[in-house]
Length: 95
Image (cartoon, rainbow, N blue to C red; front, side):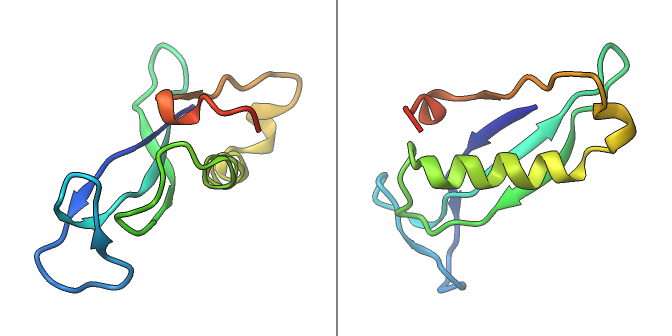
């Protein structure tokens, strides 16, 4: 599973859109993708919409996104297996 955040610009006042660190206006969602092995498609399984001024290394947001993504995986595919979760540098937090 890969979890990463990206700034998404909004050109109008949408719900939770705020000023970003790059002096723009928008959102900073965290998105989780799963690749099911060699034939995997990289499907999106969870997304957490956050305001544009949300921090990059917010532990609670990364943990919540991972929890939402794991809930989407079939139990039959998870039994007896481990799931590798990768994040960008924003996920390198102690919690």
